[in-house]
Length: 152
Image: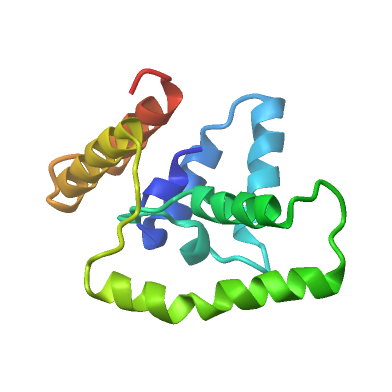
């Protein structure tokens, strides 16, 4: 499950190496599923789901925006289209200002301490990998350890 942490060009060869080591029927079935759903996808290629050297790997920003829009609409059910359209127009008018603030370095993305610590560890691993200090296997193991433990 840590394959997306590899560079895109390394993911498929490593997947095939892992697939050859699948010893149980359940694992072989799972590997077949991953191959069909992720590698043979006509929608998303490996380059789309590789997160190698990416600081944003989750959709929390989108979820936060969605929650903010929902709270502004003050609705738990379907919103009439014309009200949604008005709210989205207001949101769109703020984009030039946000872009300017980002360009000037005056608008920052907030990170929780735990996420910042995790990102730091992950980027250290990627640096070691890029320098040739650790192998693909070691990178995958370390990434799975980072994400497999609640106490980062």
